[in-house]
Each structure stands twice: as C-alpha cells, then as structure tokens.
Image 1 (cartoon, rainbow, N blue to C red):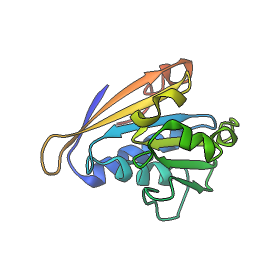
Image 2: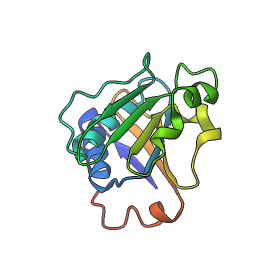
Image 3: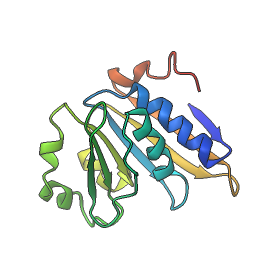
Length: 150
C-alpha cells in the first residue's frame, strides 16, 4: 500500500491512526533518508498510543521507552555499527510480547527483524510531500489496513 502525505500534520495523523491500532508484540520498521518523516510519523503514532510525552528521535541514546496504553519502545539504529550493539543494550528484554517496538533506520538491523512486522518506507516527493510505502508481513498485519480510515 502506498500513501501520499502532503504535510507533516498529515504524516502525524497517519501515524496516530496506525498507533491507535497497535497491539503489544507489534514491530514496526521505518526506513528512509534523513528528513523523510520517520520521527514525525512516530510522534503521531505515540499519540495514538495515548502517550503525551514529547517524542524525539533517540539518535544518541539509541533506545527510549514510553508509557501509554501499552509500553512503547522507540529505537533509532542510525548510529549503530552492527546489530550486535543492540543485542548488548538488552534487545532480548524488549521482545517480551508486552511492548510495541518501532525502529527508525530499521534496515540497519535486518538480522533482528521478527517474522511479523510492518515495514514503512519513507520517500521525499517534494518539499512537503512524502510517499509512504507500507509492507505488512505475517498474520498480524495481513488485514491491518482493513477498517483503517486513511
């Protein structure tokens, strides 16, 4: 599925709607160049989870945890040299089925992708417009977009 977003507000609203449908154990992979809207999307996603905290990319600390309707783990893999660095940060602890995990720059940790995930690729189309490609994988995300008003 491909969706065009014509502003950062639209990108946040899209993230919010998807966050409202997120469930414990969900894994979201965000891929795209700098400035394509990954963090903007996750700001809305967090609102959809009922999180009121300010969402910023954890570029230097790698992992941020937020409390909302469900625990939300926000990972930024941009500065990782290897997926092993994430393993050393306690990766296994996050995979308890109770957390919702979203990874910016997820293409840097392909070795850690689970069997089921929603991959979202972000592309610049113009100064304001972004193209988002959604690629669901696994039973959980098979019908994810059904009844989702976008």
